[in-house]
Image (cartoon, rainbow over all chains, first blue to last red; front, side, top):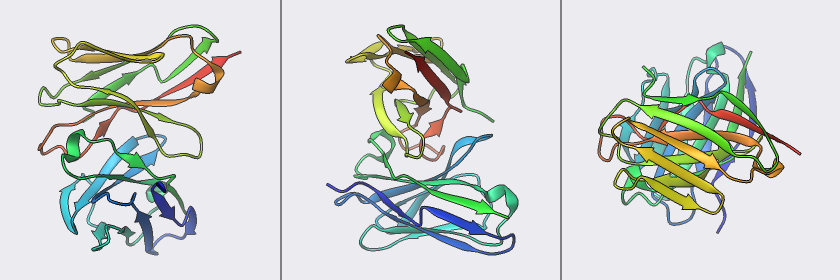
Length: 115
Length: 114
């Protein structure tokens, strides 16, 4: 089975711009979670989608949003980029039956640099 | 508020030695404690996980010890190898909870010297 894929892998943007990141989960997985990874804060939960519905949201400003499509693929969007948004954005997929205790399979991430 | 505290931040171990990473949590509603391993340029991958109804779980050279009363759990890597050099994250989650998804510790960078 193919793993979780994320596109693009690298991205450079300037402050004030917006960005859209894409995630394709493992075939058959219905849940997708997004995390932000930075050296200072570590891995922080952004949001989780299941069957096209946002099921949980972390403590991030409204500039961070996401959605999930009927094929379970997910996108996240960050508007009005700030320097502090520079991070590795990780997507993880799981079956979604019992989300909090299932193995989450992470993609390689999208590294975003905001200049 | 950091809900999962991980130590040490970095660890250097000789090949064949034992690597020990510790985590402490605050929320007694946490009921699933996985450890993830991350190599440079890769996403984290599940290494081993434990639930609070057992005090220890072993998979090959990797063992989780869990102390519910102390709200602590640790990862032991026996016979550490250079290929184990990676960053290790402990995590916790609360089934059906309001905490979001996995809450991660800040990670431990392990270097195993040959």
